[in-house]
Every structure is written in C-alpha cells, then in structure tokens.
Image (cartoon, rainbow, N blue to C red; front, top):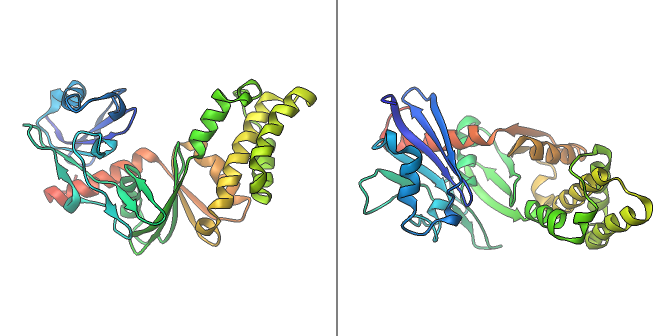
Amino acid sequence: MADVAWIAVDWGTTQLRAWLMGRDGVVLDRRQSGRGMGGLDSDGFQPALLALIGDVLPAPVLACGMVGSRQGWQEAPYATTPCTPPGAAEAVQVPDTDLNVRILPGVKQDRPADVMRGEETQIAGYLATYPQFDGVICLPGTHTKWVHVSAGEIVSFRTAMTGEMFSLLSTQSVLRHSVGGGWDKASFDAGVDQALSRPEALAASLFSLRAEGLLAGLNPDAARARLSGLLIGAELAAMRPYWLGQQVAMIGAEALSRAYITALEAQGVPTHMAGVEEMTLAGLTAAYTQIYGEAA
C-alpha cells in the first residue's frame, strides 16, 4: 500500500467507510466497519480509525459525515445557507493527534430549521461532475434531503423523515403484521397517487392497509409497496415547490432512488441518477485537491 496518497472517509452514525486513494485518482482499496459515530465515545474515534486503516497511515485523511458533529471526533461548525458546499477553507483539523485528519463541516439552514452532514459532500461531488447544473438534488435515505442548487450554491433545503417512518411503521407498528418483504409496482404507484391527491388523509390511509389485510386478504407484498408509495407520495406533496417545474438529480441507493424516480416521472419530472459512492468520492477529492494542491 505504498502507493496510497490519501484516505477518503465517510463516517456516519452507524458505519465507517474508507477508500484508499492513489495519486491518479484510482481507488486502491475499499474498507468498512460498523464503528460508526453513534457507538463511540470521544476517545474511541482514533482507535476505530487505526483499526481500519492504521497500516496505511500517516497518509492524510479527509472525512465527511457525522464524525464532525457535536458528538463526533471534532466538531466542524455548520456552514449556513445560501453557501457553496463546504470545502478546503472550512475543513477542520483534528487536534491533539499525530494523525493528519481533516473533517468537512455540514450545512445548516436557519428558517425553516434544518441540517445536513455528509450529503453536502455528495452535492459538492455532483457539482464537480456536472458544474453547469441548476435545479434540485434529492438525496433519498433514512432522512431524505431536497436541495435547491443554483450557481454552484446550496440555496435552500428540506429534510423528510420518510425512510425512518417506513422503517418504524413496517417493523414496530401494527402494520408489521400486514407487510411482506417483496414488491408490487402497481400497488406502489397507487399509493403515490393516493397520497399526492389527498396527503391530509395519510394517517387514515395507512390504517387501511391493516384493515384490508384482515378483511380482504391484501397481499403482504402489495401492502409493503403501497406503504412505501403512500409515504413517498405524501413527501412529494409536501416538497412540491422543490420538484415542480424542475429537473431533479437523484443521489442515493439504487433501489430507493428508482422508487423516487418512478414517482417523479409519473408527474412528468425529468430525473438523473448518480451513485452515492461516486459522488462522495468526487466531493472529497475536490476538497483534497483544494487543500493539497494536487490532482488526486
């Protein structure tokens, strides 16, 4: 591993991911552990990093994600919208260590109150890859972000807890008895249409899944797909100012991104999908190049 020039790190709440980068921009190795920020105390970050990439240090490390939160290794204060995605100038050096570790900050919005950590680096990567992009970037996940981007800046954004709601409802609510593990596109489409047309009826529509399972034998896979459609449809209804009349770039896991794309394209919204790893690395690489003055 003598060819490792630097290490790109995405350190979230549950996972620690690292990419060993060569000077020519090639990923030499990918590494991952379950030692996310949420399971570490203040003294646990350096040992966790050493356990994963200690054999290639002291190569410089550039990290994004929850590692820069108040509960993380070193707080990297939020940039405030409107702003360009944080880069070299905002990166914070981790003190009191022999390691060369810098952390990129997240972004905050005062009104309405909102925050992101990690997604801003994916946005930076998208803008580095598509520098002329103006429009909306959607980052679906546990907490889906809708981000208005113009002239290279994050203008505004909103977060929807749709992914977390789906997880809670499908595994910890009464609906856990009704949903399966498969998929039915027609049921998903019907759920999206139902919630878009009557988002105020979401709570009642959700319980209907349970009732239809009991009274009409609703297929569990169809129930799961309709649950997803109802939640994503309600989210789209709330986020209409972000996607209506816009082009939307989608950065997320493929299966979830395609669900959002299906729902948006049914409304006539043009979309483009980009990979999470690709955009994260592009964002970290852009910041690394700014800091060290060399192409990775």
